[in-house]
Image 1: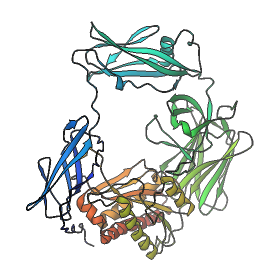
Image 2 (image 1 turned 60 degrees about the vertical axis):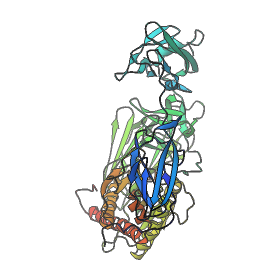
Image 3 (image 1 turned 90 degrees about the horizontal axis):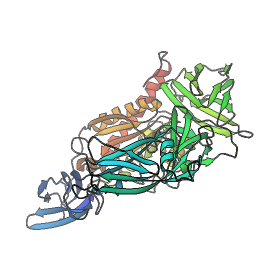
Image 4 (image 1 turned 180 degrees about the vertical axis):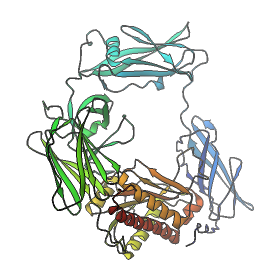
Length: 605
């Protein structure tokens, strides 16, 4: 198979300048250098953008990396484009919006940038929790936090111009509350204060209110995690937890989980997993537990495994639906950690008539953490958890570990249910000529579907049209169809401010360890078939990759924003090359999994 991109087709037509990115009056994220791409209507023209010659491809497209033009009015700037062919000339003045410029006051005066003062709409904190209050202002001044009970010095950052103070919540509450509100433990109080900045002669002040609720660590409220209907993404029975209010996704809590709340920042709620471990969830993902609900605590008694041909299941009755976490130390092992649990497990029935379960053990960890470790005699194919309500506040945790499907050693694809997810719409990138990523992805997906069927597999195509479909709708459809392997087809683009030339290529993303081998195999397959730059395999916090029930990866085969890649992605022959690489990767992964199932040393893809 040819290992280079197909030649860009030649287009000859009238001059017709158009900028595809950035869009007209789009606010870009950088103010120094950025990319701009679009088309001029013909491949035999010359193009100048802001005085710089830009290469025009045979199909009339272009991609340039240029200084961002300066603002001409407020935050509006204009790219000036001139295209020529012989005596013909076409010009375009393309407007964009620059990033906001931070406020700068009069030099030598103690100015305060009021836009830098960010106060919460509501903040809950434990008494000893440290709060950070800050503002941006004239450098080299004296700053204080002024409150009812006095003035607290603030510290200037080493770079200058940013001032902050760190105070325990109880100390700030005592300093800033009004005389009649200082004893309002457990209620939100609008604390009053001021930032004061002085040059020794003149003082500038900014008054603020800080709504703070001091929480009683001995009587924390209990919430139940819920999942609201989402018309864009769909639902998946999971509530995501983060290590900080806007941090990356880390925990996957089954709907119905109960947890204690020990903090809040606006619409983000902090739940306590253990004394030294917390997770943040959205306020909309919580509802108050029934009145007088006890803190989520439970004993974990004896366990009984049920081994079936397709999965291993253990049901764990609990006094309350506890927060949990599932990890995979290696390819055969899963660890279930229950927060707020005490182990009273004396016996574990591992299931009769099967050798699937190789080892089971549990350990009690500090902070009321019960960890159950299950080692299979074959590769873990996936896992999932859910809560089933029992009488009263009791709940039954259903923990399922998916077993490797039967794989034919002569034809690993035979009979396997392979899910193909052509990424987008909505969202998605658009190339310089206006070709939409979602269309390219669908063409590749259709080609892969035909190839899989010819190879004896059972392909499951998530979409066949251009209607938007939510991320969790995609994963739910894959699970409901009985999918065994999931591959999402995409093509890449870069964010503002990243030089595109030399960064284009092929990459593959995964999230769960049992998907790592699939990601590596698909990456190798695509590199062999398309011969583009190897950008590597990534662990990526992507929604479709977070699906845990089957090996799931997201392929970024080529770059929509690169003119030669975009032109290739329009070509059915290149789409077939992309698809054949993914096909080979899936085949290789299945074959490797079969070999690993008989390897006593374990399986680490």
